[in-house]
Image 1 (tube, rainbow, N blue to C red):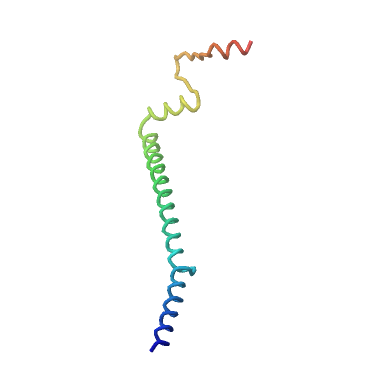
Image 2: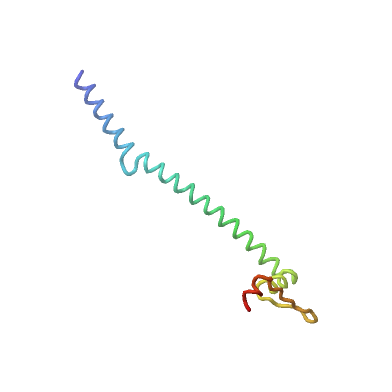
Length: 97
């Protein structure tokens, strides 16, 4: 009887070691859960970026105001009959001389 109990305890210890330490054990499960959490956070940030880009595309397709604003800021365009003034800070103007 004593031999059976010792054999069962050894078997239990071996199975527990495999469960905790093997490649498919709990360590792997914890690592994969952490990796999945990081991937979900990255996916959420990319989803937020895509929503913002989609809203900008819709705005550019539907309204001229957004296209005009984009042309003014990104391309430096001005309208007809507008006068463009470029203001140079005093420190930069003095250093250019």
